Length: 148
Image 1 (cartoon, rainbow, N blue to C red):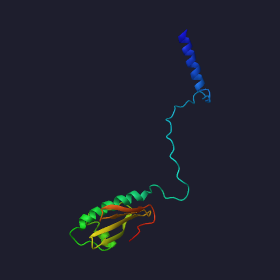
Image 2 (tube, one colour; image 1 turned 180 degrees about the vertical axis):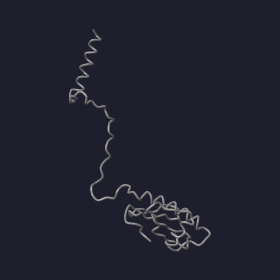
Image 3 (cartoon, rainbow, N blue to C red; image 1 turned 60 degrees about the horizontal axis):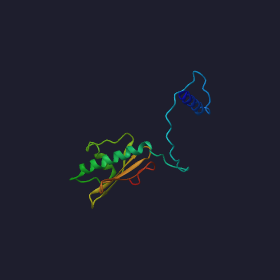
C-alpha cells in the first residue's frame, strides 16, 4: 500500500511540475537546450569605438616584432633618421608587415640611441613601440599614428 502511495504522489508531483507549460503537438517535440549564460551588463549608450577592430591586433603584433628586430639589426651601425630610411631597411632586416600595415612613423633619439616606431593599418588602427623601455606604448583603433 505504501508503494502505491509513493507512486501516486510522484505522478501528481510530476504532473504539477509541467502544468504551466503549453502542450506540444505530436511530432514537434524538441530536445531541451543548455541554459543560456547570464548576459553581460550593457555598456552605456553613446558613440564608441569597436571593442577589437580588425587592424588593431595586427598593428600591435607588427610594431612589436618590427621594433625589436630593427633594434637588433641597427645595433652597432648608424640608426636611420627618417621613416623612409626605416622602410628601406625592412627587407634587409628580413621583415615584412601584415597586408595593409605600414611603417607610418619613426622618431630617433640620438642621445639615447633609441627610437619609437609606429605601425598603421589601412583602417587607421595604429600602435607605437618605444625601444628605450622595450614596450608597446600607445595604440588606437582609429585616427592613425600620432607622429610621422
